[in-house]
Image (cartoon, rainbow, N blue to C red; front, side, top):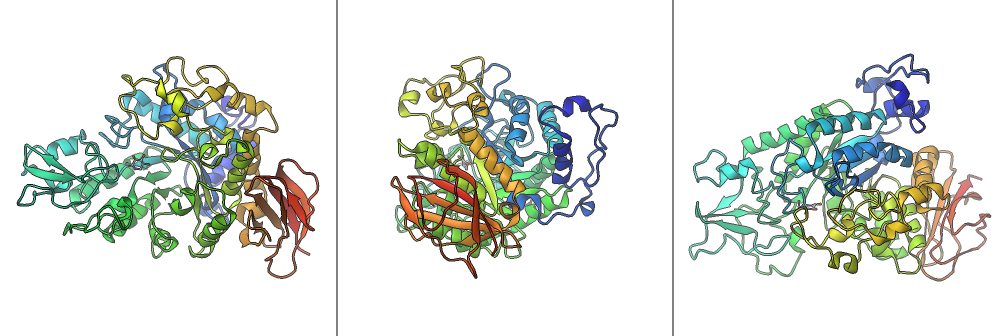
Length: 583
Ligand code: NOJ
């Protein structure tokens, strides 16, 4: 067994690293002759001293399982497919994966309408497949975060079926039911995030139920203690089955203003997802604190990663909890929603997340199953490759936790309208979604099926797979994949990039973003990013004390050999990482 484990990618070193990453204490590691098996994994965090917990500078790779790897030829990715690709992920160097929902679901919102929280949808496999994935990931030191859709269930969940059965059903109060106004209209004029009223009339029981997303996604009632406990049991279920925590879906919406005030300006004011009556109500913080206690109560340094939209950096700070006792890692949408390369805007966002979050780890990302891929959203059609290297450099050199979206590391683009236009709906794709473009099958190879599935895939494979694919990029030292892999490697091996402080600098040019990461001895990495399509001169300032001595080029796109800063001219959309030493 150990021989199989110690293959070309699982070196002795990475096995030890895996054990340390999970806080496993001392382990015995087999030698290549397989003489000795490793001790059973047992959490004993006291025996491992780390400067900071793993998640404060982790790279978490989001996998949309439907599109990652199909192993049973139904055109839909599955859990076995994720297991099959773990060595690839290990080779890339990610610390954890976040799996978007793989639970039974009618797929009105592609899995975000959960019909059973503690099971695997047949199209993704079985619980045994989950167990195998969890086991194999753990062996490689890769953690798994399960997507917990806690604000709403599917209207096909057994809980909701009971709830809507009659007004006196014991689960009636597990969802949010209200009477119509005297004229029969909904209890309030609020709008749902996906459009239309937040209220859906139920003819049988003559009441409305509340849904902030689709009508097929009724909001659960977190004020009901039984519902609350049932939800907490879901957390315990997956933690016991090997999850290392959760990505929490839609955390701002757990409670609404129960006086249901009419909105005098429903189309105006704050966006529909951040109205004072539907988002960020204080009662939600109590729930988050409870959940934090639950995940912290299990061995193994588990975490909560939050889909926590906010309007301001002050709002983001609150999501960590006053005493940093709520969400470990709230995603920074103020940064993640940016789609234009503007050095001044980035400088403000990056400074804010470093100086206004009380030192808590910022969480950065650009692409996701809800966001256009960064290749497409930032690309100008001419310099996309260089631009993608800039956004990668930012994601992976900033302090804090970085999220990547599958395929980002090879420069996958959104499907074009043309590619989607001729793709009919089918049994496996019953509804189109405007987020389809960023959810296309992973491009493993240059074959027409991208190495994703042996039969027609549920969404079209991008034509670009002929040239943009993992197989080709693994062989090419100058590829996007290798740009990412090197950044991921430096993030771990370079002391300044691993746990150094962030230094905000002035580039002397509004088109160029400059910042540094500095270790305790004053050595580090200077990052220079030309966010324009013209050459730009830079003259960096803003160091506290004597400016350090710039020493060498760590990484550069396009390639340069000398690190000259007196002054320097950066090519269009250039990205440079330069080492420096204290004087
Ligand atoms: C956020 C998820 O990321 C998105 O895909 C989903 O549609 C909504 N929450 C509703 O669950």
